[in-house]
Image 1 (cartoon, one colour):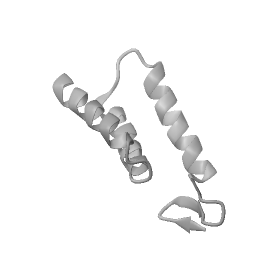
Image 2 (tube, one colour):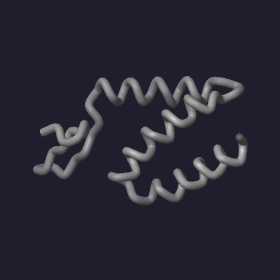
Image 3 (cartoon, rainbow, N blue to C red):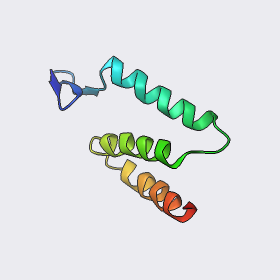
Length: 75
């Protein structure tokens, strides 16, 4: 069952990204890592992906807040 863009399997307690979203997010993160200088817009896109993931993994909020703080200091 797809709920808000996530594949949810309540029987086995799994939450997964659909394959198209997984591929897009992986490409965005890989391109961000491979660049020597990061574009602010690209960084905001990856932070947006991480915010969606933080709704599923609450401990990610701590890491995400540090990334956002570093982005604000860099501009």
